[in-house]
Image (tube, rainbow, N blue to C red):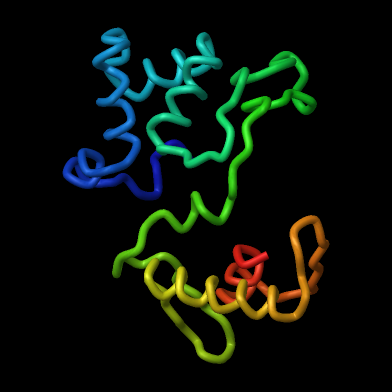
Length: 158
């Protein structure tokens, strides 16, 4: 099979985060004219590529990184954004609006949705419940949970 099963429309491509990212890079790296150029540039300039991803994604941090990558020739084994300190949940929950964050599908209910605003609220409530239960920083929280939105909420709350 050589033909793709699906291709996005031109307008969908133009509205994509990938296109926004590529356009943001073109100011500093005019040699990036299309996806193939971006792909090759990311391979040839991995440190600059990952630094630009960090900046484009507006990663929130408690402590900035000292070095983008150490031991890049060791995959696995490379260390990324060495010295940085970030909160995973803070970065995933940056949005606080009515845009869809999660579309869940399970046996009951068959389909559920959560906006970023709803997700933030549920994560905050779960986090508060964990604190009230005595969970503190450095504690380990474990669970055997199904692949449902509540699992994501629990992970982000911990």
